[in-house]
Every structure is written in C-alpha cells, then in structure tokens.
Amino acid sequence: MQTSDIGIVPAAGMASRLPGLTGAKELLPVGHVNGANGCRPKAVSEYLFDALLTAGVRRVCIVVSPGKHDIVRFYGAGDGRGVRIAYVCQEVPTGMADAIDAAYPWIGDATVLMGMPDTIFRPVDALARLRTFFEREHAELALGIFPTDEPHRLGPVRFDASGTVVQVLDKPDTCHIRNTWGIACWGVSFTEFLHNELPSISRSYAEPTLGLIFQMAIDRGLRVRALPFDDGLYIDVGTEEGLCAARRAGDGWSTSSR
Image 1 (tube, rainbow, N blue to C red):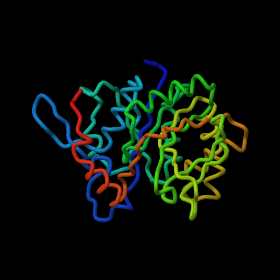
Image 2: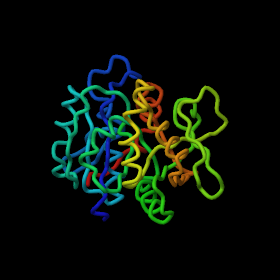
Image 3: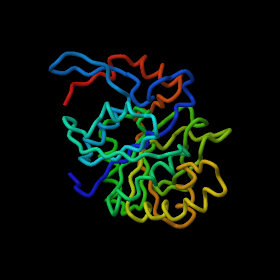
Image 4: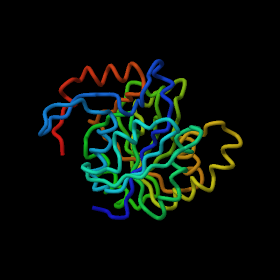
C-alpha cells in the first residue's frame, strides 16, 4: 500500500446526458453484489472503488455538488469499505478539471489516482498497474488507455512506441484513433500545474476539460506517459447507450462483497 496515495472521485456532474434521472448517476445499479446478507444491486461507482482498493488506496476524496446528498448517504465515511472518505463540495459544477482542483487543499504532495465514477473499466487491477507504471517510468502524469468504438464521445490519445503521449483529444468530430484515456495517475508537479494554470484557462473556457489540461501539460514539457490496456474494456455509463451496454453484460458485472 502506498500511504501517500489519494483517490480523487469527481462526482459533481449533473447527468445532463441522462435526461429524466432524479438521483445521482454514480449510484445507478449495474450488476449486483453477492454478500453475507444476500444479493443487492451494485452502484456503478463501486467498480471504481474496487479498482482503488486493488491499487492499495485507502484515502479517497469525493467531489460532489450541492444536492447530491445521496452519494454522501451511500458511502458515508467509508466505514466497512476499507477506505477513509472525505467530501468536497463544488458549488457550481464547471467541469472535471475544476472538480479535481476543488480537492487541492486535501491532495498535498500525494500521488493521485483518478477515475470517473460513472464508468466501468477492466481489468480491475488497471489502476494498480498504472500506479506501478507511473513510478517505473518516472512520469509526472500517466494515462490508462482503453480501446473504444466511440472515440468521438471520449478522449482519444496519440502516443509513440515508447509510450510518450503526443496528443490528447477531447470528443473530436472525426478521429481514426480507436482508444480513450479512462484513468489517470499523477504526482505533485501535475497537481501544481493544474492548480496554477486553471484560473487563467477558465477565463477563456467556460468549462475547461481535463483533456485540455493534459494537452497543456504535454506542451509545457511535463513527462506524460501512456499505458495501453489493449485487451481492456471501458464503458461510459453516463449515457443511455452506455448504461444499456453495461446492463446487457448482466452477470459479468457481478462480484462478491469485500
């Protein structure tokens, strides 16, 4: 376990891609958990927690927006889940980059492991492997890359044969790259870069994307590396199509409780 690691879970979004949803999209049921008390539905965000725990993360900061009390009720302080959970409130949801920076006072010099709580990715040890890769490559930012048939809706990444990231795109109109970044690991240099650059970027972009910040880091010379999971799986459950695709997987998402 890396005691200086922290998991950041940006959960402040308002589920604009799922019209009619009344609760937090991060708690949508996908698959189920078999436990001592029987079977229960499993929330999509619990898959991210599985990956964080597998990576040895024991401190998690969840960024929520006002009104998303159901997430706080569901996870509480992390008792019984093997983690200590803190919550940060992003008063106005203005994108994932702002959500992550809202946790800045709690990050310090920790290594950050981040994934989206409305996605499911495989393998379950992807974050653990990304953390090891980050250390081995002496990276300042490491991205986990997954295959996808929908790069136009996600964040495709160009990288060379050595794994050096050349370009990070964000929902491009056309794209021949059949991948997307889905998870990330970074150190204090990128934490400070994001925190210091975001105020000026926000004057030009209403909602600066995290992909934009990644690209800026590349342009400024930060060491950004890619770890491809060529046989991996990545599903964005934050859309009607993605939610249906995940649920069609059925028992493939079933797990035993910890």
